[in-house]
Amino acid sequence: MIGMRDFDEADAPALVSWVDGPAALVMWSGPTGFTWPLDRAQLARYAAKAGPGLRIWTFIDEEHPAEAVAHASLTVDPQGRTARLGRVLVDPAQRGRGIGAALVGAVQRVAFDDMGVHRLGLGVFAHNSTAVALYERLGFVREGLSREVVEVDGAWWSSIEMSMLDREWHGRGPGPGATTSTPGR
Ligand SMILES: CC(C)(COP(=O)(O)OP(=O)(O)OC[C@H]1O[C@@H](n2cnc3c(N)ncnc32)[C@H](O)[C@@H]1OP(=O)(O)O)[C@@H](O)C(=O)NCCC(=O)NCCS
Image (cartoon, rainbow, N blue to C red; front, side):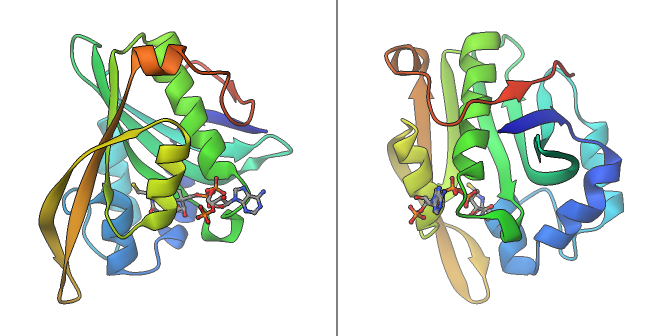
């Protein structure tokens, strides 16, 4: 089982080590926000923005709680009606074991069950087939394609907008992977 807690600056070295180049940085965080090389100073500025409008989480394997295995953030609008999942990243050494699915399921539970949002949205690069398949498996619906939003290594990347609505969430079962969550900011 995975657990989630607020991102702490002590998690920065692990996060830096999971992003192995400029393309991986954009794949993770989109065209804005961070610049290559990712470093602790950028992550400290990011962590300082956390609050009710920006939740930033570290995910841990509960059998090894000292070790971070993944990261994600959730932007919440001031009225708390809509939210956006972002910055989803699993330790490369831990991928393909269901952590991504458990993480997204945990954020869905926080957003829909705890916060009561109406809409949970996200953006994912169109060629990131693992992530697109993961989100679709967990109930996200494709809304449309934003064409050629960023150029990486001479290639233009397009982004798919996806969302899930509260009625779709409440029509489903408990979702993948039981998780625990601790209250945070
Ligand atoms: C996308 C990402 C978050 C997925 O994380 P993950 O932990 O590997 O996800 P999961 O293990 O839940 O599922 C991914 C794949 O593993 C498979 N899988 C799930 N559980 C598995 C298990 N126990 N054993 C083997 N494979 C498994 C899934 O079927 C899926 O396969 P597919 O890609 O062929 O469809 C991860 O690859 C990542 O961090 N990528 C870089 C950053 C990124 O792209 N972030 C998304 C930005 S929108």
